[in-house]
Image (cartoon, rainbow, N blue to C red; front, top):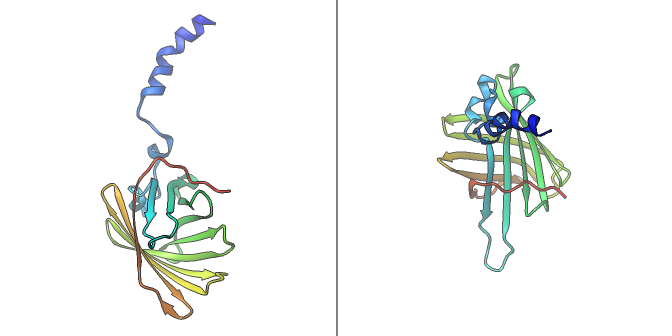
Length: 177
């Protein structure tokens, strides 16, 4: 037994201490390479009014389906609310499209447009939202190790004032109940 351990110990040390991760070593479809800097986990404390409980969002972006898609997962306040998206390039539409499913029982479909190498705009159609939201427009800006997200909602026929949140890189976990 000790001979086997000693024989493979150098290999084990190399594997343990080599800065290598499977997700970052694999490629993305060329149309999805713009997401490479989004991959990883992000966290934001939402601005809230005085006396209101804190709101924390943890989001993870990861390579999915052999690099043909990006999967995002997020949870607010340790699973009070959450969602999951698949983002992929639709060859027929010639667009980056996505589907977003939520723990609140509604979903959205949409597409994304690249403004520049660090800015994306997402346009969503909402189905089944109980608060009357039918569309969402979000702008994501990568700013080094932070990401600024501004979101407006078409609610009962009127666009809301954009809500802005800043996300930082994080090692927290996305939690679903």
